[in-house]
Image 1 (spheres, rainbow, N blue to C red):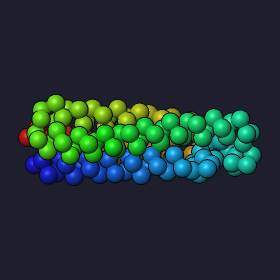
Image 2 (cartoon, helix red, strand yellow; image 1 turned 180 degrees about the horizontal axis):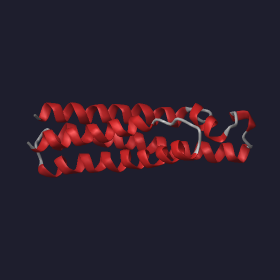
Image 3 (cartoon, rainbow, N blue to C red; image 1 turned 30 degrees about the vertical axis):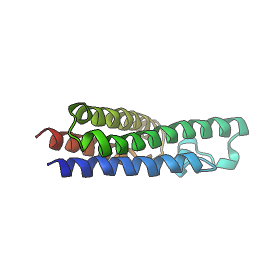
Image 4 (spheres, rainbow, N blue to C red; image 1 turned 90 degrees about the vertical axis):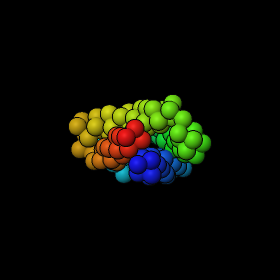
Length: 136
């Protein structure tokens, strides 16, 4: 059962790191950001570009930190079956994925953009699966 949990949490960690790195290194906003603003990157004022990139870097850093934290917790205390890790990992994952779900849902419902809401839902689902299989 712990193998299924380990796989679920590992997927979350890897996707979090990849998504976070994309947000950390992109020189401009994501395509759905442009749809939300109804502007291309070059049409956005330089001070707004700076603000958007800063917010992307914060978000990206949070995703990378979440992914790395989950990997460390999986490698050491989770493998040792320490009880606190069974609860810490889903808590960390849900804080990140629920926040992401809320943010992407706002963009989806208030603009014509199509942000990755499903990615957040998949992370929430995998977190629930990971938790269930770690406690049974």
